[in-house]
Image (cartoon, rainbow, N blue to C red; front, side, top):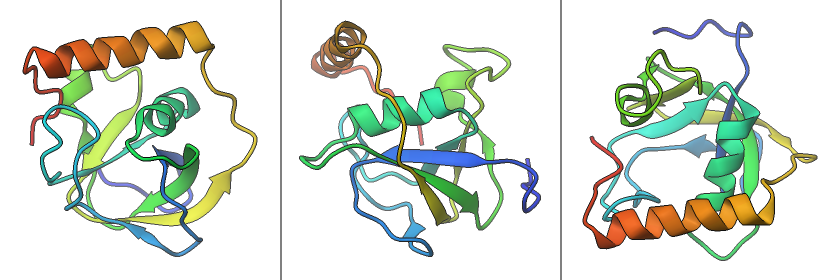
Length: 136
């Protein structure tokens, strides 16, 4: 899938303090699974999926959601679309090319505490069972 400038808003949730123009690049430890070095960067066209990214990201800082633009080709994220949500209703994608930060969503609302706790417990159970959530 190729992105057309201005045709779609994409988001990326993490805990990094970034500025407009910064690049989010592959090559960092994944937030999921064994924490391997990620070959891809992930983005979404839904604020809900970006919220999960911000809430589940590793690190001590506050969750952040950035508006991003792909600098190269993007494709459906097979970690979600093929396994959990056929048809990609979460509008989740990945790219081997960097994402350029074009803005930040300041007024996002996190998931209810009980829903976030349940998700974190599920992620931890999967990690303990050796289930790899990210396929590169």
